[in-house]
Length: 470
Image (cartoon, rainbow, N blue to C red; front, side, top):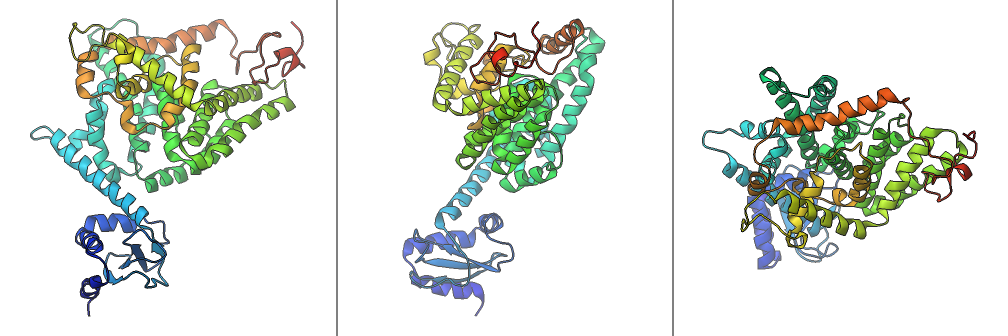
């Protein structure tokens, strides 16, 4: 008797509700394929027992081959040996992902304009710059399974191109016709890096694992090329992607912080990543926090080594953030509400999106207000806010980085080249500062200042004890 016929005949062993569930899976070849491809069971196993009910030990079960053929149905109490048992909860979770992917595909079809192809939809990542909307991003995620690690590789390529052009672009202070297109392209590619970082993190687990494997021998973190663009949102997107990469990426971030060169960007970004991984994954929390706090002792072994002290300082601030999650989450939403009041002030009274009081702003607008804010990360206040918003970034959904379309249109309108010139001015200003003072890995505290390692002692009594008095 063919497998399928035998399976259908043996459905009399289970209840009507279980029969309906099994038949739905039997008819849905796409869903079954996805479930079988994403099971936490060795690929060498020829068959699996899918639990139909809630009792993994007693069943009932459906026996299915790894290529999707239904073999038989086992009633409650019948043994599925020697085949591994898959809990119903795991199956339902995977089926939920299938339903979500289908919803996104349907949404993407509705988002496309007449005559627009799917590849044109992806072009929005490049063409819309800082005005990419939640709807745009939601539609793009319909194709993430087909993209694999391509968004990440494109992010790296675009980032390197922008970084190479930045010295020249940041010298521009006044625009004329010949420069406008160049500045616009620079702006679009910069924001493309930000969007591709989030699109990378929205991928399936197997694509994220492939990315980790791809970067395992690289000295820097997988997310450094996003944070290198020196905006608050770029640091938070890097932290979010680190959190999505998860526990398997933790050794990479530890190594990167331990070996970070003297620039504070590498130190801060790696510390952010470690904290974000611990905050998103409970099983990694203790390991991440323990490592961050351990760097203080390393700095104490060589108090004259300013780079070690700098690493210990960033690690200390990240470790502190891990211990005040509820407080920081609430504070981040309040900051976002304040931003939204400010963003909406130009609207006429009575407009549905004009907010007079922060308390009136819904949380689903406050979150993207903080997460998408492109503030100057050379600024100490902005750096401090970044540490206070790690928890929000680590636990965010991908769409939390974006405003709905109606909000983008009402609050921000179309791109103004002056926005990009203002953004680029931060790099020009920083270069001017560096010309006027020696380049140091990190500023040396005054002898009576608090030691940045977080001990609470003065610098002269802690890591500055071996330094000569001025």
